[in-house]
Amino acid sequence: MTEGGTALLERPERPGPGGPSRPGVRRLSSGLLRSVRPRQWIKNLLVLAAPAAAGELDSLANVLALGLVFALFTCAAAAVYLVNDARDAEADRAHPLKRHRPVAAGEVPVAVAYAVAVLLAVLAAGGALLWCNAMTGALLIAYLAMQLAYCVWLKHVLVVDMAVVTTGFLLRAMTGGVALGIPLSRWFLITAGFGALFMVAAKRYSEAVQIADGTGATRALLTEYTTGYLRFVWQLAAGVAVLAYCLWALESGGVNTHALLPWRQLSMIAFILAVLRYAVFADRGTAGAPEDVVLGDRPLAVIGLVWAAMYALAVTDL
Image 1 (spheres, rainbow, N blue to C red):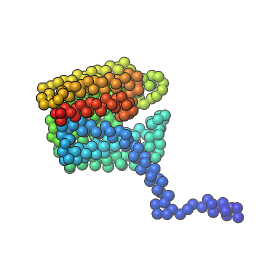
Image 2: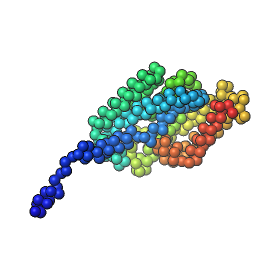
Image 3: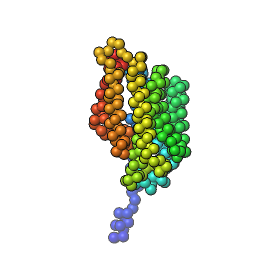
Image 4: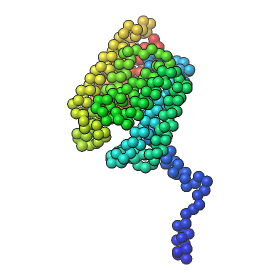
């Protein structure tokens, strides 16, 4: 009886329709969602930068068009994250933090990661070509090609690795303007490009400092850089970004003759303060992911809101 009872207890239940498979499906879905990095989707809001600077967010049609561009960039970035995690799964398993990534942890099979990445990449590229103008489609496809090349090869090339990541930010900022046919100011492009390089180099510097302190390890290429060089890069980039923004704010086309105050010019103060505040974290070696720094520091967030308010007043000519 004992044996019969034990056998009865151990006898597997017959799977009902979708019964035992549901936890596995939920686990896979959850793993895929975490693999596409929802916290980093905030970077894709850069597509609003050029239209906001030009005061073109007052139209529902423009907002909907930019919403589509944001969604397409989110799909493209998600595809890149999945390919990156699938390629690095073995190496990530030996890393104290990255081993918890769903692909490395076995929650998402490598084949599934690649399959979903292909679907998202096709959706992003095809959607851009079908629903946006030709230049928008070209920029998004260029972003996909460059980022996939980064996953496969370019992230192992000194300096080029930072340039590719920086270009990813710049392409986001450019695509929003191109999608609406807005001419892009040279100062806007320089500010956006070197501002992105400042944050990328600050992150690399922070990772290099952690490696030197023995408190962390992230990417193998960091051992090829010196902390002195990375400090030089982020300081140089910060200086160029500030100079370009000041020139942008002071150029003749940016003077509002009917405004109560010269808001565009006054916004230079907030912009410089934001760079100086961010540089505090870079100098300490704690400037990790840009979204974590910006969202995690209240003074920096307040400075950012003040800058946005000043620039909004400049755009609306109040």
